[in-house]
Image 1 (cartoon, rainbow, N blue to C red):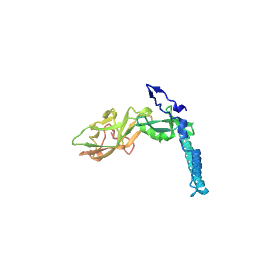
Image 2 (tube, rainbow, N blue to C red):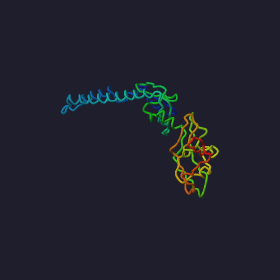
Image 3 (spheres, rainbow, N blue to C red):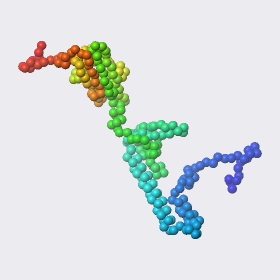
Image 4 (spheres, helix red, strand yellow):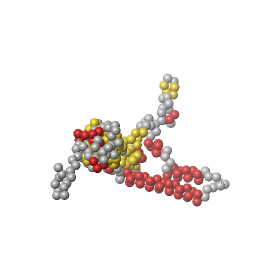
Length: 266
């Protein structure tokens, strides 16, 4: 009766917007009761000349029961997996009202159950398990912040000597480095022979003047708390050098030969 009475303004009936509640949404969901009502209606209005058999009704009910059990098992499995995420770092995929996708990362503090579904607490907000995009390994996360160098091949031409440069990542967070050391071949290079500016390391050309032709590995050792060393990323090739391999002597290196009696050769 109340639906027939509507407000009137300026001689016109004012239409009111209908509000959809959670209860009405739930009632519109096809569940066990709705299935039974459909089954009763089907039996009531079946064709009397071609009635359905009991076997057909039982088969329909069995199919529905199996589907319901599978849904319950799936939900229980999802909730169980959610509890195992507590303490782990996850990536959450979210969408705003405009439909734009954003990602939120953080540690799962606890799991909250709401209407039989698990919700994850990340950075003080609750997210559905369905929004889980990925689970991040702690070692992987730590390595992301560690200092590192990209794979680089340097070349020093003795006929056209120039300083050589390469880029480094000094790290982030509590694993950020402030300085580094260089080892070329097996020799520690004096810090006065190279400079670090921002994320670029420039090695003075004098370092390579007494090096013979060949390819040498460059090891970069950072002063972060783990003393991270990158020894397989950078190589330097020496070309057009007149220095013989046996005479190669890196700057600041003291070549000492011991006599058979153990004394140094002066």
